[in-house]
Length: 210
Image (cartoon, rainbow, N blue to C red; front, side, top):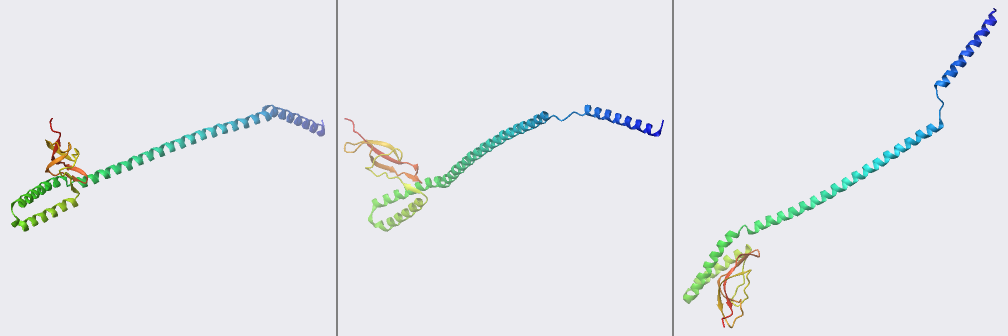
């Protein structure tokens, strides 16, 4: 066999083997399917939509949580502000009425002044200077009490009895006087910053028995 014939057979053999290899590779590697690609893209889009919905729900839940916390904070802040106001009012009341026991003692001193003045007025006119001095002292003393918030309760004879301001210790039948009218004052009453700390002790009129 000549070299030329041998070369031709070798070329034909190589071509056949190459064709077989191409056929084998075609069978092993599937062709791209246009429908499969579209389906994959659709699945991806659907997955992204689900994720978007989940994020929207999560954001809505977070916003609701923020609103609830804000509302709770505002309520707590309002309650705390009210507490501060009540506490401040309590402190102010303590300051106002801290001197109440002292005032009660001072009232007794004022009672003694009033009795001394009444006794001196009944004795003689020779003691006018002493009497004037006692009165001046009494006025100064009462001015001091009034500057501290003390006020005498109005309870002159002839005025109407008020159970919130007066304490009745006796009743006198009187035909010419309306019932529940103050007839006599035994002890004057006092208020401290508008609070009654001692009611006036009085006698009141009542209707006479028929």
